[in-house]
Image (cartoon, rainbow, N blue to C red; front, side):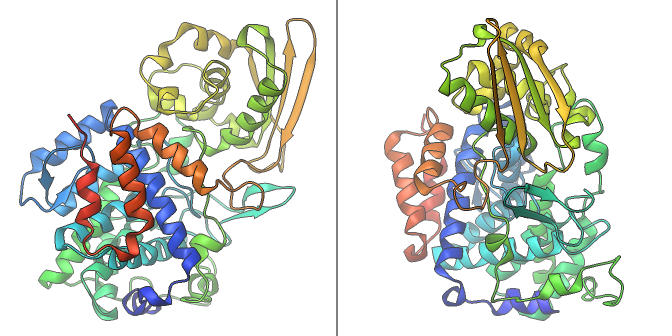
Amino acid sequence: MLLANFAAQTKFEQIPEKVIHEAKRTLIDSLGCGLAATQTEKGRICVEFARRLGGPPEATIMGAGYLVPSPSAAFANAELIVDLDFDTLLCPPHLSPAVISASLAAAESLGLSGADFLTALVVGLEVGSRIGTSVSGLWGMWFERGMRFERGIGFEPVSVYIGMGHTVFGAAASVSKILGFDGMRIANTFGIASQFVPAPTTAKFLNTPHSPMYKYALLGACAQAGVMAALLTQLGYTGDMTILDGDTTNPEICDWERLTRGLGEKWLHVEQAFGFKPYPVCRVQHSLLDAFLSIVSENNLTPEDIASVVVKGSPSCLVPLRKNRDIRSPYDAQFSVPYAIAVAAYLPKPSPKWTSPETIKDPKILKFMDKVRVEVIEGIGLGGYVKITTNKGKIFEKEAKIPKGSPVEGFRMTDKELEEKFYTNASGILSNENMRKILTVIYDLDRLKNIRELTRLLTIEK
């Protein structure tokens, strides 16, 4: 009940300004990623799927010129936001697409204020983060301490990859908050939400050479489940209200202290692991890309100048999905370490083009992958080392211990950098005027009377 009561009782005025600002930043980042994905095959499939479900016009799908029921909008928008693997990092990752999509759809359907939406968004992110880093089994992603950032180590996982069930609870918490539930009804919603939790297939996913479209999990279904669980509670459906209660003496089930410690005072999703991605590929590649692009830029190297590249990262660089050189889809490209280095050699400015259908078939990029050798350094976390040898025999080396965008001083992405990323993602989809309006509205969201003033700006201009 502690998490349920926290979700019910939290008021906008109680949330620190820093936390609100980070919620706005992740909203900017996520909407840019989602708009870019409206141009992908998966994006078009998910938008069409939501349209075919039919139902009352309640909420906006990014890029679409029509409204759909809020569960359908939550599904489509979550799939759009996560599609490019460019979305905001949390602890655990990929929580934002489900929570943002579910809360935005529910808030739009009711015409809530920006402040009410932000409150629900923050609550959902916090609940999802605490569950995902505390509860083992089907619901957790990283058990015990989750992920930590340490100077000299970087981004260090400290336990076992399991699943994405935390996203369902985060979405359920945010929608319950929007619907004005008390603690008892939110606890009931958690009980219903638990029955929608996806199978813990993340380890299987990483050990498969080729990625399906849903990647880590079908995050659209997780967002949709959060909306559906809350709507079922609203209609009187009952769930197990004790689903998050258990044996507090058994650390194999949950790190109970972490789950509730400082609840309402410490915001774990911001204070410990809020980061952003400068590259549209899996985070494991990012330090390697930081080092590679730094060498290339500092020494004015062209792809033709380079004879070989040795990259060294964590052991996770050698799981089948990440050492794959047979690039069949954008999702293979997002996880392949050799591909990430090759595409950066020819397209040094990160953009959605990195994994477009044309780029992943570019013979120059595919051939450059042959120059890349991947090795392992134990204990490096998400750090990386790169050695480039030129055709003239010159050798350049660089180590990057912490990837750009991490929540560590000196590595954070600034507001300006996130705005530039948003423009890169939404360019050619929205007009410059519309993009500027979206940024202005989001930064002033706590004073917005109706969230629909934001969602109406998310339609692609014909």
